[in-house]
Length: 370
Image (tube, rainbow, N blue to C red; front, side, top):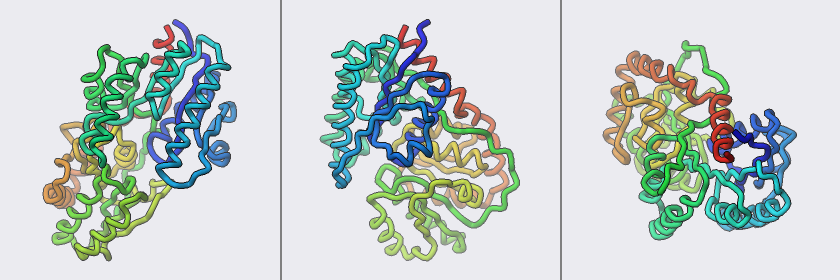
């Protein structure tokens, strides 16, 4: 079997979130194993020093434009130009392109330069299209994916539901399920004094569905008026969500914390995590919460069933605020059982430890080169 010597990794927009943490874990272990890494991204010098192995070679593609969507577009274009230039320089047949974002043009370039490419698809593409803000453009992108993804050499996906969606559009069995390389270790302490807090973690946007969380919490307060809802994250819907709290007359019970780097304190203090996302890949938030013994109530989005299991997980239908409120009440009233089920779920968290999962990534890369 051939062994990978060089990886050209495309990740144009270095953003706060689970995908970025997976990228960091993957690239650092690859670099430790002597694999040469060329990382195309808009990473700042501060983040390079803070997060990455010093042997990684960076190609910066940061846009000077600060307008959100336009900035991302220019950054993406810069990354493609950089990829084109890099492919002309690197002739090593044991090199491989790994695309974490913006897959279609890298797939085209891989064929032009006769290089093999793996793409990482981190969401359920069917649900992502179904719940998109702009249905026409999302449907067009979905059609492009149907065509171009079939020209990739392999696809890494991170949840059973996401893989099933990919299998419906692929002519060959190209999709490989590999769970996120996320956890450094399993948290051992079980005795945490928890406060009367309901926790929500995620970008403030339609996908994360905080509207349902807030509406459910308003009903929940009828039974437990002394609880607080702590919302961690930032995003374009913050003003809308704050207004919803005002309209429901619950603002004094809802705390918006913004983005928080280290969530351990919040996971250890809260009673329940609410996660009603419309679609996902494999939610690192759920993995981390369970690791800190925090019970979770989730929609059946991609990845949630993988993490929480059908037997012990607490699930709701999307956009069902009354159902969610009832599950919250039941979980608090039967909290001893809720905690016990969380411990049963936690027994399978070793599937998400960093090193074993990165080794699976590397093995898949080697198989693609063969």
